[in-house]
Image (cartoon, rainbow, N blue to C red):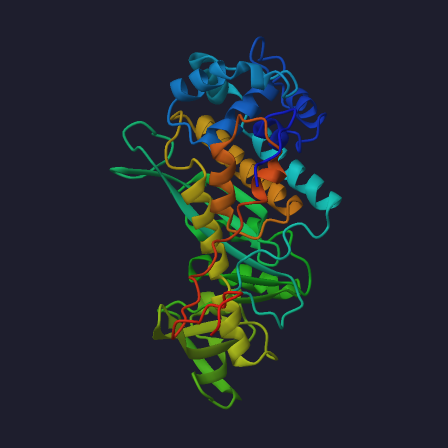
Length: 407
């Protein structure tokens, strides 16, 4: 089936899901409208979205491409192509907090418009028996060039930024994120990452985020949490909670032994030691939680579903442009990271409206290939379903029936 023609380009159809008033309102709020004379803030956003979706490799790449397609940019609310120096200057001096705010505003707008946006995603590692909201907290490292980026150096020959994220595992959408240099420990960001969680919800995180004072705060707020126990955690057994069964080695209530840790978390903890299958091999792990009622197998399953945030990080880092950066300043890096997140949300939304059943990476490459074509975005998606399976093999040749011939 040939894709239907459309009045506007695919890029225009993606950008139109950003509310028309929002960018101008934010540019006034952050004072960016006073910094822009020929290169407007809206043109800046469109250019950075093109960087992400087209995988532009350099400033020359994006400026030359958009200049050659300037006719397709004009219908996108009168966007204009940037010069090389103009785009570099905008990334270097304009406040990236505007790009961050724009991301959250667009996500909120889409979620308010479609309450079921994000439901039915393809990640299947979530335990279905839990009706509560489950959030995974983790971070991913974005490697940078050490000899050019002083602000992000965390080792003598290494520089990196870190994206700390709280991901809703039911919708596979970010709920909170911090992007900063990688020199700080994960546990220092735990308070801020979990500050908006509500009573009865579940937080799952790796042992890098274990801070007993923070865990006590979550327990006080009546939040449930599951994490792995650190190897050097000192504790004493209080009593057995349930009988060992199957892969569960033991399930016990414990108290922390070290004075500082016990002062931070004076209540009892639940410790579950179990064999968990990882890449086809069983590995012995220790989990701690503040919930005393769940089955031990449920605690293991909850921690296993934390892998969903690793799938999310892999999804955005292997498709969006987060490996080659157009600038070395902190503001330029943050502009590129937050517009990458914005591009992710817009493409997910296009897939949601078109009832796309394939992978995000497949949809991304499909749209990237026809970015400036005047085709209807949903008709482009229609003939590109998942690949069919191998043809059915027949054990013996079937006899053909030909009319008029005696058998």
